[in-house]
Image (cartoon, rainbow, N blue to C red; front, side, top):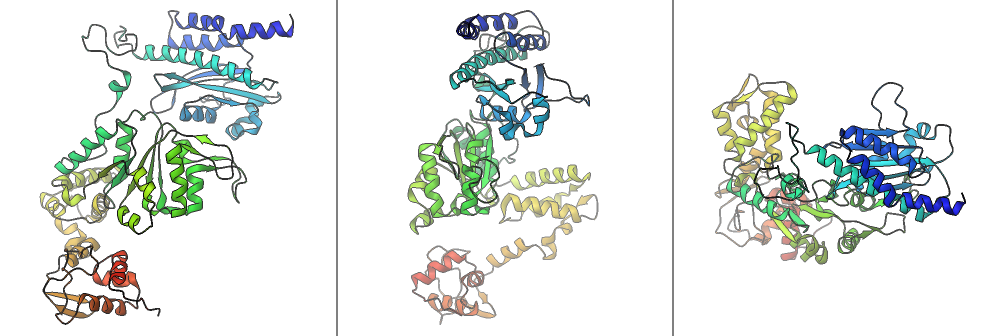
Length: 556
């Protein structure tokens, strides 16, 4: 037979004839394991291959069913999953993977010995098993490296993808058998036979409606959760606003889990913890040799989150230079790795979080207005804990149960102890409440937590001291040893408010706002951060006040 006729036969086998043989295997009355094993054993007659496997995954991403061809069992007898790194890549991306030479790929470095098995170079082809955009597993083959062209690879990928999707349909049908052995699936597996229920799409039936990791029943929290459920249905960018410790990451996770993207990755990154250069590498990835220490190619967070959701925490802290680079990715859905020239397309649902006043940052030129409008499509304001009436006792019990489970303890709150907790304002919100419960449980002297166990009862709680300072009566105000009596309310020197509102900073009648500000700066050695602590303000507010009153900062 000539070379041309051989290629013609191979092409025909990868078309209708090959799919017909695979379909016959899958519709035979047999268990799923036998069907998949027969499929992988049929493939060598249809296309060149040395080894191959069909790997069906559980909801947690662990192998549930594996059918192999030419794969030697592990010598230790333990369950061995060949090409696991490649399988993970295929599942994460939900796209085919072709590696013409596995010796040159980082995905196969851990098992080159078993892959080569005394042969020459090896080519790997793997495809996802999909039903209704859901990846149920992978199908892969490998063979000794040949002179296959790009067109031949594309043809084989197309054929293997059709085989994988047929196998995925068989897996889905098998998974919807009822316990008594009666089938429960229609054409799309939407309802039980004879149930009388209307047929629902798979995405609607399996979408979770309960957010178990957010605890609370207050009206303020319920309102946010309802907004989350509505927002989750779309791909719109979300900006989570709120004080530190209000649980922005948990709400971002809720949006992802309630969205159609829940089967895809949820990737998160704290922008405040990284410099501009490191942040660019983390988000966009880098090529080998792009900079010192880049010993291999690395995918960025945008690539890892492709098809899923990306959370950028502390978005207000990124530098103006990097804001322009980020804006391009958000506008065009394209990026290049650091040191690379290839343009990559990504499909990512963006969620940003910040406790910064972005509007003020835009007005000051610290944050780009066009980036602000891009990320602030749907703003969600998370309520502080002090506004979530009744949620503190429930949260405290949850945190105590978690502590007991982790430390093999059996502590409980007395009613009086829960009353103490409920009366705290917790300026650090949920994060501070959890730390308070853990600290109190660690130092508890008996099997029950009583009021005296709390550090705030002995004056050792920093947050309680902050609260006392903020609630100090307006009759006196101590400014580093200088006691001043109450004056008539005056306009705030910063225009943004003191701890208790405009005019709450008490001054002596003989001191104006400008003089008080100068006095604080002098006592702080003209260090704005120290002066801010004396005045109960933030350094930013002190900076505003200095500019407003045209006070020149002295260099000491």
